[in-house]
Image 1 (cartoon, rainbow, N blue to C red):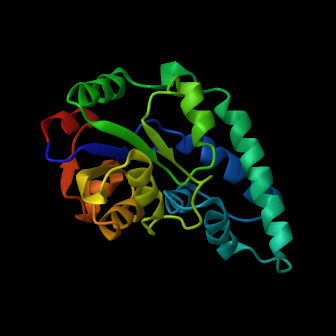
Image 2 (image 1 turned 90 degrees about the horizontal axis):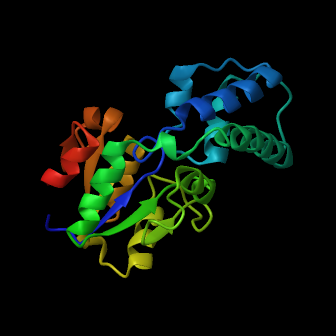
Length: 211
């Protein structure tokens, strides 16, 4: 691998919290009388909480919401989500992911997280990875969500690396766009392999060891 570091998105790459996001957004949407299904939920991949809520509000027919009301709704959704996340444990980290991460580290690579989620520290703790990564860039230290490259550029900065020396691993097209905008090569996994924007397409997480 020509890169010196790997920056991973969290949801859909290291772990899978889609079902919890879906359940929390669905509960909020139902309360507001907004139609919400898994297809709409898929549009929220890699998108910030407020931007996700704006997508959900496309089907809202009530009185226009103030920014304060929108913030309150997003806070409510996050409270529901965090309650559901308490169900996560180290058992939710697959052997393949952990062995691949250890294999990359054994090759001398620096490892970081680049996620729009403000819940990243909590999720990593639930997975038993609280202190595992060399750097964590997440929704707590950025002002712009993907496809803006800020989260990945910050990860490179925290690692003390040039962006061109970092490989980004993403499962969402918006994340690939962010990596490309930041001057980084990217490995697409899952749904992201369909858009054709990845420098590499991964069939499995362990394929990273072959790059």
